[in-house]
Length: 231
Ligand code: CA
Image (cartoon, rainbow, N blue to C red; front, side, top):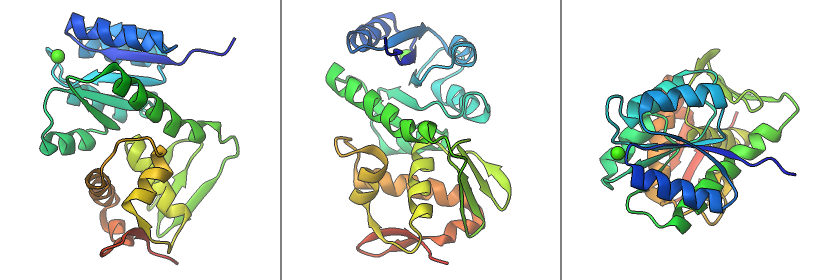
């Protein structure tokens, strides 16, 4: 039998925790539950889930702190994180993306949307793990190692979220080509993923910041989209 994908839900509110895990179990996932951030981190390290659903507002360590710790740890940084939040303001999203979260789901959400987002996140992490050949692509001092899920800037490892990683890899693999925001969304997430053009801009902003001086090679092409400058 095929291995069930293992999801970790970190949520202090028992009602939501049960609702989410019920719906995910019905969709064929194995679900592990944690009621606070510390327990979530422990389980993430010991059970290596395929994806983590992380509530933003948690007692003690909040979701952002948990996410930063996950992304700072070699063992857990490759695990996609979907942040559950009650607030839809874009500022919160920016903070979330800075923390390394891969996506947001705003409460209240329908089970259908939840399952679709989980599937999309698992799918975009999939191809990188399936790549068995150890291939490193490099341009302008930006080196991407898909197998290790690692990016080096001028030889120094820099931590990117899974979504930033996918977008940057897509641009680096196609230097000189201009892509619209929608093409970028399709390339990294698949067509059914309900992401906006604005969130591509937010991701690009985050990517440039993390690239430092190398960020200038990720060029905005006015009225069209983005490209990685060619050689
Ligand atoms: Ca909460």
